[in-house]
Image 1 (cartoon, rainbow, N blue to C red):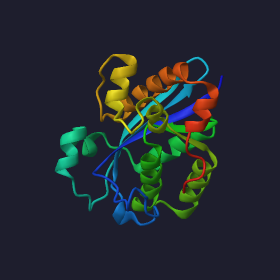
Image 2: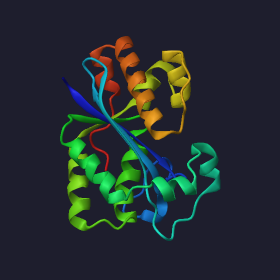
Image 3: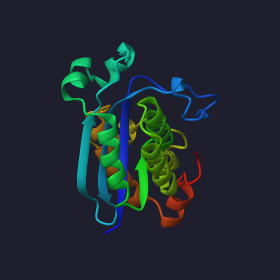
Image 4: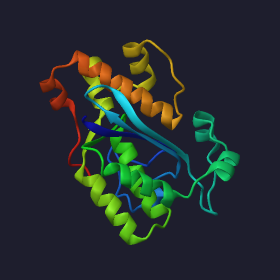
Length: 209
């Protein structure tokens, strides 16, 4: 088996970038809160999902719900209140899973990576916890499936379109677990269409911080 972790965040809005560049993730005012975090342990050799995780995040007392974002992801304040799990508990499970895998994948990995690290500060996690999660995540090779898909289209495309084109089926977009599973299917389909050399060329992203 060759195990990878594929993850996705649903957030309370978007990050404030400057010409596509993400600000330092300790500038928490430039990043949205994570409302749900999902990931799977995925065997890229046989395409099997080994394990899956899906959590709503309990929010801080000063949380202000973004109605515009809510209309996209359909996560309600009531869901967060009733079903939300403490962020520290969720990211410690995520950290445990990181130790099992070679690489980390996401459809738009730069967004999810920066938002996740920013939320370690936003939720006031202790420095020791922040540090070990950050170090572990930064050491992993991070693969952007959106960049791989751009090989087919010559430009960025939304996950829904790529999935529909390659898989031929719709899915429930903007549900973090469904997005993760769709990303896995897209990656598996892309692997069948590109050579190993092409995949390595378009596999971003080892070095961003």
